[in-house]
Image (cartoon, rainbow, N blue to C red; front, side, top):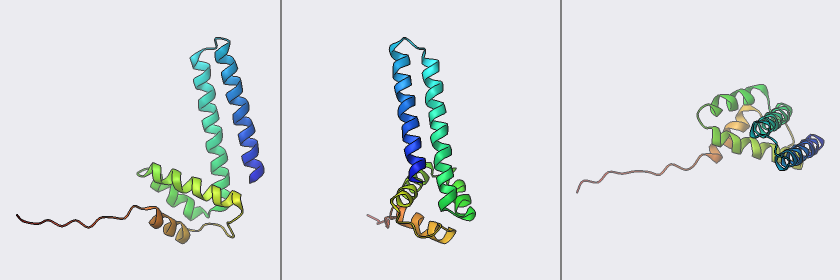
Length: 118
């Protein structure tokens, strides 16, 4: 997993350097946008590959469904899971029950509201 991340970082650095060089040479914005989109797609593919290794299919499915409504929360969870896996603190695959626990911890606490008549 660490090798995947290192390879991804090297590739991203090379792409950024190439993008910067093309902009300095007067390269078009379309080429830069295309390269950025390509880099984003590649990073997403790497992230999904890591998540496939550390999560069960049921947990990944739950995360995919949740991404439709709570994209920011899912991105935080994915980053947290990948960080835990890369640091070596993950002992077993994340199953649906563990994912539910993580989601509950990440949810902001709901405030109790009361209505008072004046």
